[in-house]
Amino acid sequence: MDHYLEGIRLFNAGEYWHAHEEWERCWRRSSEPEATFYKGIIQAAAALEKWKRGQLRGMRLNYAKSRPKLVAVTPSMRGLDVAALIAAMDRFVATGGPPAPTPRIVLDPPTAAALEAHIQAIQANPRHV
Image (cartoon, rainbow, N blue to C red; front, side, top):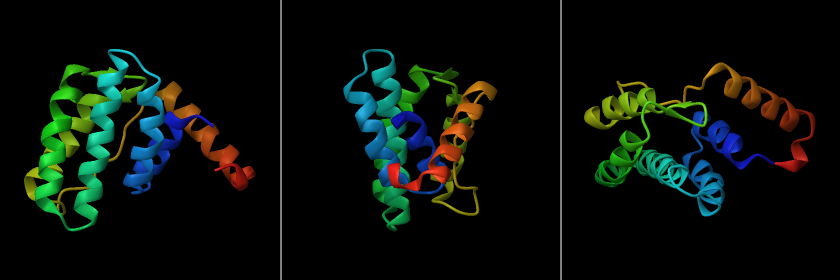
């Protein structure tokens, strides 16, 4: 399984804790600058998990750790539009959640196609998730 793509799928489905877990596997095997990238998206997912649990202070604290890491790898990495994620997270954290839209990961076309193939493979064989 591609843990990076699975993390994106889970993040965009609002399963932030599980996305965090998938990306930790990637982070442990990475070197710089990807390690900083993974730490940034892991902490962004943790921030949104805190929001889901009603812990707005925890959301803000986690995002405060995440944002500098994401800025360090802007504008994109591994097909992920980091600048768009920062903008979405900034809006969401500033308002404490809705009415700002829940952040979603935006991908470049090749990575979006790989994610779609990953999702189709899961749907064809859900036991391997």
